[in-house]
Image (cartoon, rainbow, N blue to C red; front, side):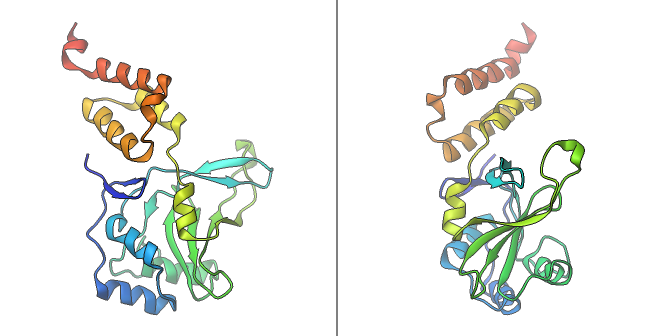
Length: 217
């Protein structure tokens, strides 16, 4: 897999960079100008996927890693369709977000992360975190939670979940391309991963297991 890259982030399946017209449409509806760093991010991440987590404080006092991996796109949108325009419209109707607040990514459920460019928000990043059923033993109350004071700070907090990497290599890797993509991903997002003896061993075992001559022996 070939990733596009923003700082230490490896982005999958990104669309072409937004056009000036698309950005102007988003900013007109938003009622605010996008920060330069966010524009730079969109040049390589527009509509892509980001397998990184951010640590979110919960109502129980614990920290929960969440992956807001699905990045919205600058395509023409209507309503709740993972485009910036469509998500602004739906969030204003359903969540009552004010002018200047931009939804820009979501997790696999109902949680969404926002860039707050309103006068009060001053560029902070806030997540709407959806509560889960009590039987899960995790957060039960839905809430807006501030994650960072700026988009740059939010990016700096994004990290690869080491435990998820190990689980995927042991249980989900089915061909060599998965292993090679993981190595490329780690080189970008965790450049010192080869100092982690357990991770190196598990990746090496996955490579050996999926090598054709190893499977036939």
